[in-house]
Length: 182
Image 1 (cartoon, helix red, strand yellow):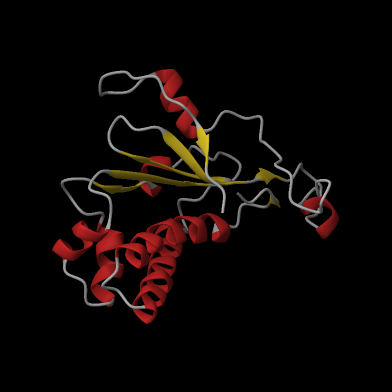
Image 2: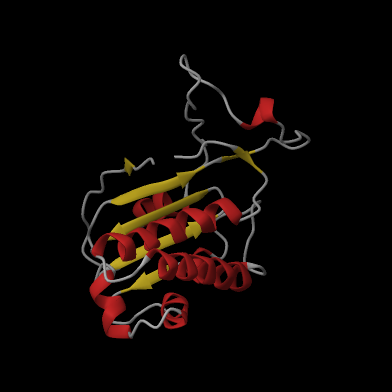
């Protein structure tokens, strides 16, 4: 998990989301390294273009639904577009990716859920810099005892926590939050 004090540029969030999806292609096979690389670069470009007018670091929940990547009975059109660029059919994408996936790409947090009632897991998390603080090597991270990054957890309620608190349209289920780090 990345724990940088960030300005909300969207690049680390997009990289986290694309890396997550690309791992499915790599792990499930039948896609060579060059294809995975092309898929990753294509999806990064597609998402950056799609999100450029829908990215609000000062209000991370605004536009969250627009930035949500969803695969269920219908393939997400942005993922499908990147898949087409490497010659994958929609049927092949359905075989390579989870059949029920929700991936939220929000300023300072990327999280996912597999299954309609699955747990929400955090892939990437960062903390916005306080107003007036310039991002430097000294302020961008805090090191733990062995020089490793120690997490800086943001105290604001995330979009996904809001979803759990305010309710949802499918039957309720208790969620366990789990952090996934690389």
